[in-house]
Image (cartoon, rainbow, N blue to C red; front, side, top):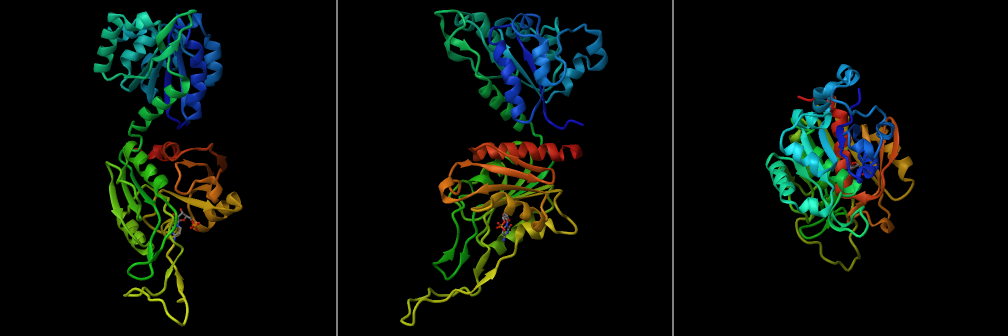
Length: 403
Ligand code: C5P
């Protein structure tokens, strides 16, 4: 069974329809399955053959097509989608949506769907500014329809410029993704996330820490909450606000973090993004250690508990999906693969944290996702995007036991 979220793309009849073919790809890049409907007017600009070839399945065109009524039907097309995107949304299609028409396949599906609808209007600036269009748009907004664009710029008609250009495919795909993420795909699931460094005291004023900012872990917790999960974020000391809509447990040491994690179980998914200190001073001095003539003090270190490994090896109450991070400076992939087995987790996100990458403490992350199925290289992207992509993958993996 195809577990990817399904976006139903309705292509309207405007010159911007040529960009909708690229939009199919951009939606697929984000892990979505795309199905297409072309209106009659759309077929003046692009063909069902081109759309179908890009989607990997036939494109739909006709309300009264006996074949599609037999294998899917317009009601199922509407219901099977997780999201409906209309691009380009022409003035006419917007008017027909606002009027509740159902006289072609696109209009009937738009009327029959109970899923979020995103429209990307595209038309001549005068048509966009026209009172009927703005009235219809206000009606659609009031009905809960989401709108992306239009942008300002050159029109297809020579010498015409103004507001009316369809939003770029990348913008539309990002807006679609945001709607899907907010689509509560993790509704009813409990997600546990660790984040930030730990701080291991030496004496009342000194401690051992590391450069982790907590940005990636916090972004993952926020993205899980946006997807409807009940989230517990166990965070070491960070300079970040608590993300809204989830429970945050603040800890200092690795041992505190382990306790807080165990208390937060059971969870369906656990993501261990914290940079836990591997060692802590064996003895914590009760008073500030003074300089001594005899020379520098020797710090005896003992190993901290490995939180990820402890939870991943639990005989009972192990989260269904346990995900670790491997921040490495050398032989990133080999080390990460070894870690997957040693720590007993299901997935590892590996990243190269050599100082030159700027990843530790920065906003951009370049990761590889390592699973039993193999290694996937993700392009450099913001930590928020990494988080959204990971949550999408998690939602796909745990989707079959939805409540
Ligand atoms: O062994 P290493 O520290 O490189 O492993 C990194 C992964 O293990 C991360 O997911 C981190 O959160 C987790 N970890 C842990 N407890 C430790 C050390 C690492 O949970 N004591």
